[in-house]
Structures are given as structure tokens and as C-alpha cells.
Image 1 (cartoon, one colour):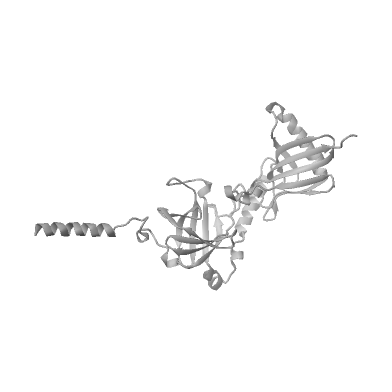
Image 2: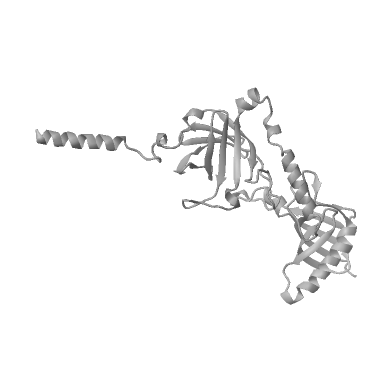
Length: 308
């Protein structure tokens, strides 16, 4: 009798152990499951920093672009702009309400059949970084909700708001008071040649394999200006602020010895004032159509006329 009781006791323990799970293995133990929203296609309609705007102080703009759909508890489908189709990704539970898919970490803040809110975060080990890398909230609306309840188009919901415009107006007014201040322009500076002896090339640094998106091209714009028939050969690379009126202010000169920096900086400023300003129409950078000071990297190369 005692022997049978012991066997029964161990049987119950084994059965209980089989039923026990963890949050990693059993979604029902988490704060929510994705089951109620499975098969619903969502479009990202807004992406905001914690300040509530689409822009941060440096001019970086968050553009909503994701389209996602929960396939099952461990699979998320997302639109691939490169492949022009939905692509499945493993939806990995990490900890808390943090998940990983498409090589990104997200903290789920809200989930319903009409909408989702994810916080896009940077996770180092098991720790969520508390800097700007985790300062992004993404809001998704179901396609059916957009079409039948809001009676709107996703493209219209994705546009910058009046609050965004007011923010940029205020930020522009502040930096435009000082030629040493600037923030990145989503529509960068333009150099429009007025002469056959002057040409410009805008350098793209986009490299998706290293996560360098198109944003790098407006956050850190780079140009090479080539001038024929210069007074002599020269080549200078500088960091410069182009002000809201198109004026060029050299801040730093690169690739020169420290003892020569100030003298070479003055020469580079003279080239910008005499050659660049006279051979090009310089259109300042703008954000939401508002001109403001912005910083660029500018390489100026001059070639003298070769004497016979």
C-alpha cells in the first residue's frame, strides 16, 4: 500500500512538471499573447520620439514605414522594400514584454485588433539602453481600421503633424541666430553650378549591410566641388555650416598639421567665399520647407590652367 502511494506521488510530480512551463516556452504565462491579433495586417502610421515629435534636436526624422502581420506566436511577417513582398521572421520572446524580429528589438506597449504600439529599443545583453537608441515609439493601425473606421489613407496619417512643423519652426529660429549652430536638414544643401568650369558631386554613404540607411545622407551630407581654371591647384576638406541664406562658414579643416590649421582654415574660407559663392547658387538646407543652418562636409578641389 505504501509502495503504491509512493509511486502515485511521483507520478503526480512528473505530471505537474510536464505541465509547468516558462514565459519563454509558454506564451499564456506572459502579459499577453499575439493569438487575438493573428492574421491582421497592420501599417505603421506614426513614429515618435519621447518628446512627441517626429524629429529630435539634431534633425533626425522618424519615418513610419513598417507593415507587419502576426503569422503565429513565434512568427512575424514584415514587408520587405528590397524584395517587394511580405517576409517571415522568427518572433523571439526575450524578457518582460520585449521581443525580437527582423534583427530589431521591440517592447510591446499596447496590443489590440485595431492598433499596436511598439517601443523600438536597443538591448545590450539583457539591459535596455536608456539613450536615444531606445527613444522611439511606433504606432500601427490595422488596415481595416484605417479604411473602414477612420476612412483615411495610411499615407496621410504618416505625414508630419502641425506640432512637428511648429517644432521645426522654433528650432530653426533658434539656430539661425548663430552661424555656429545648426541641425540636420531633411532636404540638404544644394550647390547649383552657374559655370562650365565648376561642378559638384553629392556623395552617398548608404550601406545597408552596415545599417547605414538613407538618413545618413541628410544627417551627414558630403559634397565634392571641382573647379577648373583656379589660380593654382588646391584641395581642402572642411566641415562647414551653410546658413539659412546660403552663406558658407568653415568650422574645421581636415588633414592638415595642427600648427597649420588656422592659416589653412582662412584659405579654405577664402575659396568658399570667392570661388564657391560666385560659381554656384547655394540653396540652404530645409526641413518641412523651412530653411535653416545645417552642417556639411565639403571637399573643394581646384585645378590651375596648365601653362604650355
